[in-house]
Length: 436
Image 1 (cartoon, one colour):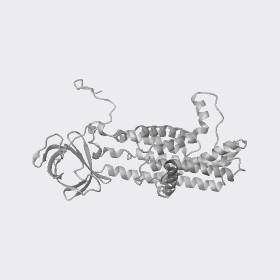
Image 2 (tube, rainbow, N blue to C red; image 1 turned 90 degrees about the horizontal axis):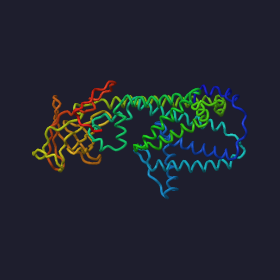
Image 3 (tube, rainbow, N blue to C red; image 1 turned 90 degrees about the vertical axis):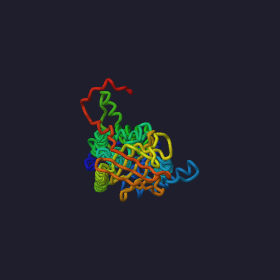
C-alpha cells in the first residue's frame, strides 16, 4: 500500500462523487466476493509466503477437509512435499468456496443496516494488491537471478533424450537453457510488481501482471507444471484488480472518447491506521523480496559450483560385465554407455544411460574414493569404486545385480556448449541431411 495512495486519502474522498446506497443484490454479491476472494487470497497467495506458510497451513488443511468431505464423503491427506495441484489443494479451493458462502450468509443476517461497503472493498483491493506484488517479485527474482530453472544445466539433466522428457521437464529445459530469456521474463514480473505499488502506476502494473501471469498460467496448463492453481489465482487477482478500469483502457485502445478517470474507493480507518497498514505492507514486500533474493543468490552460486573433478558427463570407452566386453544389447545389467555425476553443494546424483538411451537416476554419496548409489532412498547403498586421472579419464567398478562391472570413461562434450548466443549465424552446411 503505497504512501502516495494512503496519504492522499482525504483528497481521494473529495474526488469521489456521492453515490447511492448499494442495492440488496449488490451487497450480497460484494459479501460473496469479499469472503470467497479473501479466503482464497489467504490460503493460496499469503499461504505461499515463506514466513506465513507454516502459520496458515492448519487453516488450509481444515478447509481442505471440509471440501473433501462434501465432495468425496471422506477426508484428504495433505501433501508434505510442498508440491502443487494436489488433491488437498483442490479440496482447499472448494473449502474456500464453502467457507465464503457460509460467511457471506451469516454476514447478511447480522449486518442488515450497512448499505455501503466501499471502504471494505478498498481494504480487499489493498490486501490483494500486496499479495500479488509479493508473489510477482518472488517469482520474478527467481528468474532474474536464474535459479528457478537454472538447475537444468547441471549434469543430472544433460543425458535424457528429448523424447524421454515429460512436458514439465521439456519446458524447464527450454527455460533453463538460456539465462538471458529467463532474466527477461523475470524482469517483466518484477516490473509489474513494482508498478503495482504506486498510485500513479498501479493500473499499468496490473495490466502487465495480467500479461505475465496469463503466459505463466498457459505454460503451466499446457506443459503440466504443478503450479496451475497458484498461477491461476494470481492471474484472477490481477484481472480482478484492474476490472473497474477496463472501460477506460478499452477506449484508449480504440482511440475513443475518454471516460473520466477511475478513482479508488476511500481507504478505511484513521490516518494513523492507514499509515500502519502501509508500513506493514511495505515491510512484507521488502522483507520477503530480500529473503527470496538472498536465497536465490546462494542457490545460483551452489548450482554452478562443482565440488569435485568427478562432476560432469562421461562417455564409455569400454565396459565389461564379469570381465567380458558388454554387448550393446538388452541384458541385466545393461552397460552404461554414458554417466553423469552431479556433485554440487545443493545436489548430488548419479545418472546412468544405456545404449538404447534410457536413463536411470541414482541418489549419490561420495566417500573415500567410492560412490554410494541408491535407486531409492530407502535402499541399501551399492558401492562403486572410482579412479579419476588428471587427463579427464574415469574408471568405475563394482557389483551391480550380482555382476561385476567395470567401465572406462572420458569426458563427454555436450553440443549445448557449442551453441552460444550470436546475432550473425553461420552458413548452413548444404551437405548435411535435413531434419526439419
